[in-house]
Amino acid sequence: MAVFRDDDRALAAARLKINEEFKKNKHETSEENIEKMIKMGSDVEIVLRNAVMQMEHVGEKRLLLRPREDLLLDNVPYCDQPRTKS
Image (tube, rainbow, N blue to C red; front, top):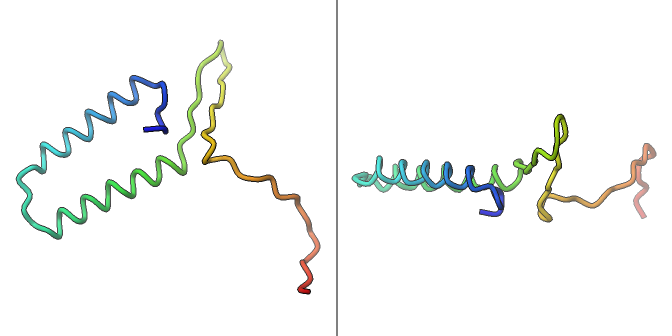
């Protein structure tokens, strides 16, 4: 998962949680409940991809932000005048 790139501890924790949830629900037969769980997993993935940024400790009281390319947005200049329609 690109969200936790090079973070072995976070990757291991995520893998463990995913495996726990699959084991806990392996006997689920209700199609509705299975669809809800799949939706929950997809929603979690979206939140992780859109809201989580990696930071790395690089010294005392210093962090290095490592944003993924897909999180970066183009800088839009501020304009306090309303746009005119052409």
